[in-house]
Length: 165
Image 1 (tube, rainbow, N blue to C red):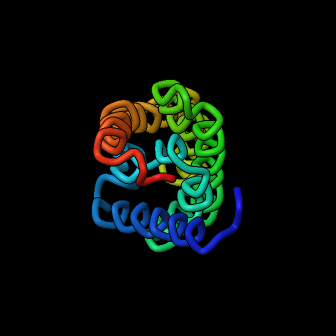
Image 2 (cartoon, helix red, strand yellow):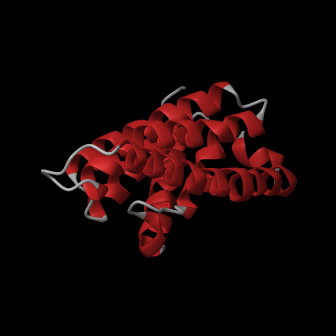
């Protein structure tokens, strides 16, 4: 990725949009059951590498401003970064790219939700509860990415191919 004013601006716009959408839909963006509308943007790496840092920074800011615990901020942003990198590599296959946020958020954010919000601090470990959190995060992510995200990709392709040049 070349560092130009255009790429920095594009990444900043994606970060701002991700953060605003997450905070706008705050009641459904955080917690054990989340339907983070902003995660539809995780398919933007299909169009541009600038989306990768934009999504990472947007997620980091949204989690910070949304009051998440520090490890939710760090690991949530890391999950988004890994998903964005993989989606970029799979850009010729958007449906497969849409699976990356589901995979990384389920496997990284799911356990974070369990340890940060579901499990009592001194309570015993509960595999069924951990699996429920992993599953609920992955399910919400799948709904957003495979429905909203793929619709976004189709709409952007139809609207203007030159938008991402």
